[in-house]
Length: 333
Ligand SMILES: [Zn+2]
Image (cartoon, rainbow, N blue to C red; front, side, top):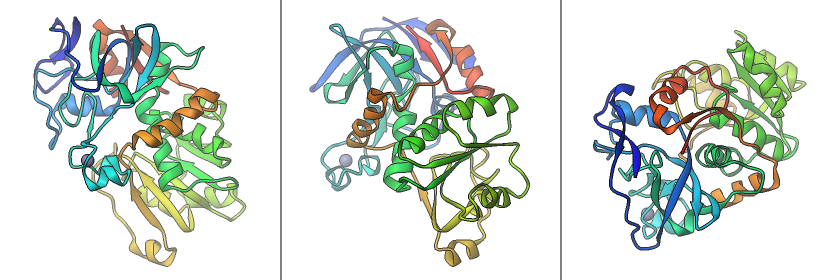
């Protein structure tokens, strides 16, 4: 089969279209004919060499996969776990010591290839009307945003969610999930071109180039109530400003820190307002199935920025690294 192989950690020049042996399915696995594979920032980090990852080169990237098996159109839950430890038994699969993501953590090969062996139990049927590329754009960010907002953020009707950085995959899923859960959404973006697109997804207010006093804007837009939950994946650039937007007992849920690894935290806000800062790492198969119902119902629509053929994987990586995208960058096979 053809696959894009990462020959060594480093730049996009290390991605090469090669012919490699077809994968052989193990116990409980089936062979998927891959038709679409979406990129995540995780792919860029793994490509550059991520400390703590078990990935060794040569390696095939790609965590978000859709394709077909004997005519059945499916997307794939990207999580991997041992299934036997206390965390797995407790439904906390992303706490499993053997937690992995297809094509990333754990070192298993990913979907930038014509075929991929996947767990039969992890298949998600693609609703009619969605293309393979659209379906591939969903699983990882949909699941991450679902766990952040529903499971950890406890978002419900009448609440307000502040979504930081409106154009990312997690954010475009988060805006739609928050609306589906009955919440109002305030989103931020530094790109004027993303304002109307975020509103079209359901954001009630979009703050362009987040103002110096974000909390004041949040107070104005919520009639003084402040926001219940912040969805963050940006980190230090807006962390303290976002924290100040929370109401007492509000939650800031974070799944990433793209503007750097360290934040300054004024502890007085945390204890006096009884805030919670919660880390999130993807989610479980059970959460994936719950979140996928929003795809089946049409409440969450895929947002595809651009589709590249598999052979142009390097250009796709550059598109994602540019941060100019709105929604997902997808490879088509
Ligand atoms: Zn486990």
